Amino acid sequence: MRVLFTTWAWPSHLYALVPLAWACRSAGHEVLVVSQPELLPLIERTGLPGAAVGKDVDGVGMVRGYVLPSEDDPTGDQRAPRGGKGPRALRMFTAHADSMVDSVAETARTWGADVVVSEPTALAGPLAAAAAGVPAVRLLYGVDLMARARALLPDALAPLAERVGVDPEGYDPFGDFTIDPCPPGLQVPAAEHPRVPMGYVPFNGPGTPPDPPLPPPRSGHRRVVVTWGHTMARLDPALFLAGHAARALAALPGTELVLAVTAAQRPLLGRLPDGDDVRVVFDAPLHTLLGSADLVVAHGGAGTVLTSLRAGLPLLLVPQLPDHAGHAARVLAAGAGEVLTRDEASAERLRKEAAGLLDRQAGAGRREAARTLRDGMLEQPAPAAVVGELERRVAACAA
Image (cartoon, rainbow, N blue to C red):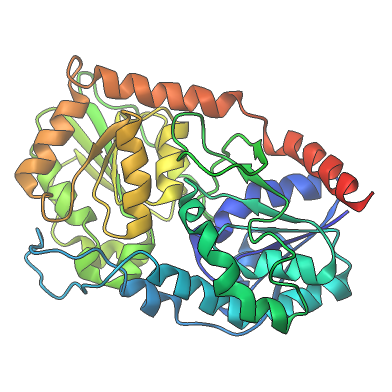
């Protein structure tokens, strides 16, 4: 079987495809990952075969316009952009599809793909599959926030469908079925669409664990991991609140902090408290830092949320983008953490919420909810098992 994976050029969306793509390769199938030229070097660093398709689009510029509005910035920096949300994001996704769809469809045909697997915002994927006459599969990277846009997709994609020879009324923009890594209790209620559960396996980017490894927390201490992903620093340094959060939480008695950042993000942290209770770790995959943690404080990105929950850890989230807010809302609804807006995330409020989550009694319910979500993840089939289901469904579509 030849499995074509596709995403637009956003690292975290690529990372969500990697575990299943490697599972397909390990099962003996041929795999090709395609995206815009900007992403090709990162595809190559995953060890998967890749190819560039279409042309680059200013994704950072578009995402920058979707930052949630704020009346106040706890960093005191008013340079943070303000912008809208909602259906405007669909215009960004269709712009990426417009830049890729012809090349993805041509690749699917000439390479002889048997199935096209795409993350949910890579709308060129199902169009290319329909143009090539093969099944299309959505592989979610987190909460299915596109479910609410399903009714809008046929009209939005109609010009692209016609361009690649697809009847706009004759295909499903959600593909033949959806592979879902979210555990029960986290996913949004969605319209009826065939779903295959898959246990979440963290892939937080190429990298190595810290060397030397993190020692266990000192007796009587709690460990908090602070991370702000990759997106916010790319948009504007004023939105990268990891240093602000670390300075706030360092004042909590008996608390050790681990900041998980890239080397390029170090200057954005500002001055950090002195002492052994604050450690900065560069370029280590997040899941390698969570084994001894008690809490994760973060921005609300899908990969960070699922990786933290996979470790059974509660979260304190400060979302600043609509999709981060969507994931944070599901964490809150599941009882597995707390959420602050950027305006609410003062040093005092961050300390208060973190102290509550770390408290043995007050935080017990949040910790138990996080462990329940972890157990739900562990009960779902591993990517290796999902490959067999993918084989069966693709064969059924071809019959």
